[in-house]
Length: 498
Length: 105
Image (cartoon, rainbow over all chains, first blue to last red; front, side):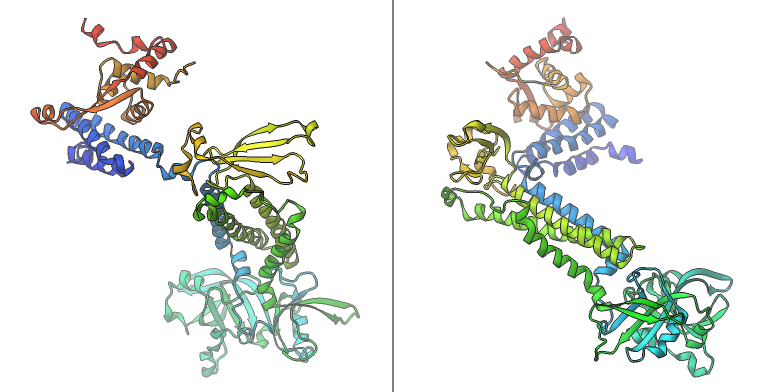
């Protein structure tokens, strides 16, 4: 039997109806299904296996959906109603979720917010040319590094160099691929205290070979996560190297995206041109006057007698920086908020005491939920923008995050208060139908301002045009149940967080 | 002043069809040529607005003919008033679907 004929059979049609019935509201489902079954049975009885039966059944989905949507108890309709608190929360949650997805998809942003992977990060510093701190561009010449190895012993307990390069790696017989490799001095992993630096199998045989550490992604992609490749030899542009291990995905937060690390001894590095640029990592002495807690400038007198300026930034400070900026801007935004908008939410009469605690509490819960959604939204968005652009220097990144975070918090908090003020305290929906009441010329004799009403019939909001000593802020007037007949939707059954 | 309910042409056509004697969903579909996904939701709306009412047929009739119970629709007084107004608004409505009396004549 073909699929088309199967779909036109009576059991298949009844199955479709049963599926559609799940869309219909529970109370009406049985009657709805009985009517549709009868209709389908009659059509099938009159026309047999024809396309009319299937077409009729497919229309049942639309009918069931209509019933669901226009049901007075339809939760979806109540949640998505224009101006409802749930719609506002759903919108904010959606934006926060999108920022989080963007954050996860941007390696720069993810790396900036993850904690430092180095246990001794407090003593580790990244040295770069003045003004280039935090960039992804190598700025230190190899010859500088070589001179610092001896001249900075009083400052550093260890100093390492690395240089991102692109080289062809031999994978199998007649097969190779281009990889981004971090060519580094032999002591880099020891300095960073990464566990992968312990392999030294080849030295036992007396023949030196540089050690290659693959990133997890490269190991998975090139070698299919085969643990057997560890200890094997391979070639990188003709140079014989040993695959010494695999390093964890986020074990390195150093600038420069690399697929593998190639650790070479100093003799091999010395063969490189002196002016080739790379990055330098050093470990500060933990005691003494030169300790770096954050940012320090290092001046080095060159052979020509000029003073070359270098920035030393602590790796621990670097990893904490986005969070520090976020906290700082949050505090400053809260402090400066009263300068942009009034903080009081308005006057609500004592009659609200008759309202159940749950209804009164929902208003504050909604305010709290908005704050708790806005804070991560601003934080993630600012980090996404600031750290999503890899070519920016650390200074530029900080300023971008600072600006976005501060103005983001300020405007978000301002919006939260303004939004809260224009909502009904009972059902939390946005007030509507603004009406001008009074005349401006009579401001001191009579009330003059704007009046808004809750479409659910819970009350009226009076906003004075000019705050006076007897009407300084907006005032809410509760309407009793006798007004309910004037409103299209009964206020009592639907009052609440919808 | 009584407010005249505003119906779309489709809803007016369905109302006219029911008044013309097509009293269950599929017969309305056949008479109007509209798909089931349009006819049934429109009939629900008309019933919600009080222009038509639905009624299940008697169990004994269905049992005698050995078939499932069927739901029939008919116009209310408000529906008849609205349909008269719709005939003025859509004059071609009567010509599109003829009355059963006319059909039998």
